[in-house]
Amino acid sequence: MPPDLIGSYTKDLTIELEGNRGHLDTCYFFTIDGGLFRVDEYVLSGGAFQYYLDIYVVACTTPDFFIEHGCELTDQGMPHDDVVENLLALDMEDIAHTKKIGRIAYKDILLQDSGFLTSAKQIKSVVIDKDYRAAGLARNVYKLLALKHSYIVCDNTQSISGGSLWASSILTLGEVRIYDTRVNKFLDVLAKEGRGKSGMLPWSCQTLTIEQIEEWGRNFNPNSCHHIVNVLSRDSLY
Amino acid sequence: MRTLARRSVQTINNRTQFVSSFVDSDTSNEFIVRRLSERDSPARQLFIVTVNNTVIDGEIIPFAEIATSASNKLRYVVKPIQQYPQLADTHLLDRIETAIAIYMKKNWNNNLH
Image 1 (cartoon, helix red, strand yellow):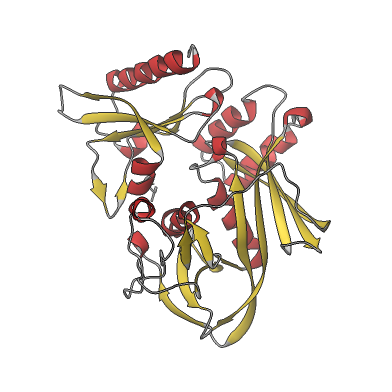
Image 2 (image 1 turned 45 degrees about the vertical axis):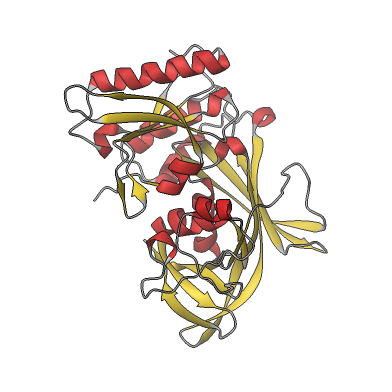
C-alpha cells in the first residue's frame, strides 16, 4: 500500500540490527495509555538501514506511578512537555524494569517541494510490542520524527497495519500529502478511507488475498502504487 | 476545541474481540465492550466500549477506552464524560466495569479492584 500493500512482515524486536551504530539523540514522551517512553535514536553504518530508533517504556520504582501521575497532570491541563519534565524530575526510573518495546528504522530520501530539493526520512521498518499496539505509540514517534527531521515519508511497500496507520492515525497529526517518486511531485492531499481529497487512490493491493483486501477495508488503486508515498511534514502538523 | 477520540472501523472489526454487550433500558442504547485482541499481558489489556456501532466516515467514536494496570486497577484512557457527556452515567460505568472484571477473572484469574 502506499504504495503497495503486502500481507505481513516478520520482525523480531530481540534481534539487534546489523552495522555499527552511533548514538544521535535521546528524547522522551508520555501517553495516557502507556506512560513514559524513551526514544534512543542511532545512525547506522554497514547495515540494511541508515537510521533507527529504539523505544523503551520507562519503568517506575513505584509501579504505575509514572502513568497515574502523568494522567493526573494531563487532566490538570499541563502541556505534554511539562508532564514529561515533571516525571523525569522525580528521578524514579526503575532501570532494571525499563523495557524495549519498539523499533523504527528509516533512511534518507530526497523530495521536491515547492521547487526546492529537500531531505526527508523514509520509514523502512516498524515493530511495536503487541502490548503497546493500537494506542498511538507509532503516531507519537512519527510526530517526534516530523518535528526533528521536517519530513517523514512512508515506505514504498507497507503491511496492512502500516498502511492503516497512515490512513487513519497519522491523518490526525497533520496534513498528509501524496507524492509521486517517479515525477517527483506532490499530487494530492490524503483524506479519509484511503482516498485523496481530489480522488487519487494512493494504495494498491496487488499481492493481497481477498481476505486481506477485506481487512484493509478502504479504497485501493487497481494499478501499482509502488512509486507513490505519503508525506507528513513539520509545517503541516496540526 | 477538544478533539473526540476515534477508532477506525477496521480496528474495531479486525483487531478487537467481543467481550460483552448490554442494552441500557433507560435510553435503549446498546453498549458493546471489546478487547484489543493482540494484547497479551493482563496488565496491558485495553477495552474499547462502543455505543450502537455508529460509523461516521469510516470511524467510530468510542464511549470509553479502559486499560488494566500492573496494580489490578482500571484506568479510563478515553473518558465517557468527554466522548458522550449526555450518556456518562455511573450505573452504565458500573455495568461496563463489571463486564471487564468478569472477563479478567475468567481469562486471567485476575481480581480487579
